[in-house]
Length: 344
Ligand code: NAI
Image (tube, rainbow, N blue to C red; front, side, top):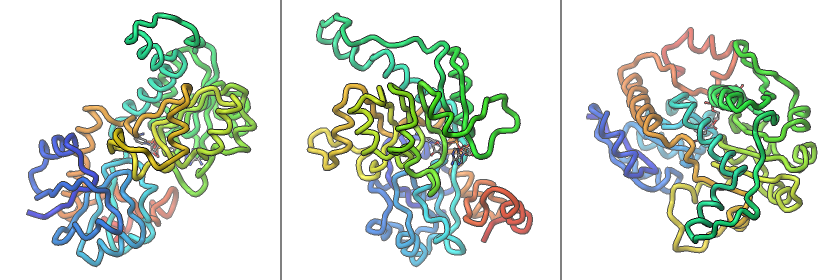
């Protein structure tokens, strides 16, 4: 049996992977993968990694030296991987879609909680405080929501928003040809939305898409929801905008410095991140710990597709879920796929 090392493992990961694993001897490790933990792969040909593993050039170099041939990401996003550094060294595969609805539904949960102040009401009534002061929300029917990124999740979320009777404005440099979404320029979306929700990947282009300048374009009292990647928002700029009430509420499932923090229990410690501590302390900010995907259905698909990606790799079959820095959108991708079963 081939040996595989699993990083950033939690009991729920083991449960789902053990249910489907037949072909591999998987060693589950709790630490994240990074330069310092890469040595744990000794004797393994594959690695299973997640969103907060730091798969940069030095880590890739070490894994390659130790004989790792494949990194199977159990996530859709891959901004944490230096794909170029992996080229011709280690094959990278991912799970491009496991449950867009899981993320879309969590996005709406954040918005509804923020709007109707459910988090505050829950705490109040547990303390037998039945006052309504400060709990007033707004009706979502007729409000304008701007959706940035209309891939699988953005579109699933737009359907939910339309169910609420909201007007949806969309921005995507590659608009979906098969959708009836109203696409507008980014500036118009910023200016006309009551609520803005981010569903695009984190790339060099989208890093700090929400910054001082874009925040200035937005409506006073805008609500901001991010279930995509933390780096899309400049957290300092967001904090300032929350203080001036430019942003009336923020629902964040991701945070730009989440790598060392999310998925861990720091309840008995003092957290060493002042920005996060401030954000958490604000009554109109809700932070969840990168859990939008976290449903039974998504965990099930993640385990099955990740193991299937490994099987296909080790059997020399076509890898439809491979990520390659040559295989971006367009012709390069088509050529790459045409000529080889795998990119390298
Ligand atoms: P997708 O690949 O189906 O859609 C992404 C969309 O973003 C595409 O339509 C693409 O054209 C668009 N896009 C690319 N560059 C853009 C730009 N500069 N501005 C606006 N749009 C741009 O991906 P999917 O499955 O919808 O996932 C979206 C993101 O959600 C992922 O990149 C990932 O970061 C995040 N995610 C978060 C999870 C969570 O648990 N919080 C779970 C899964 C994904």
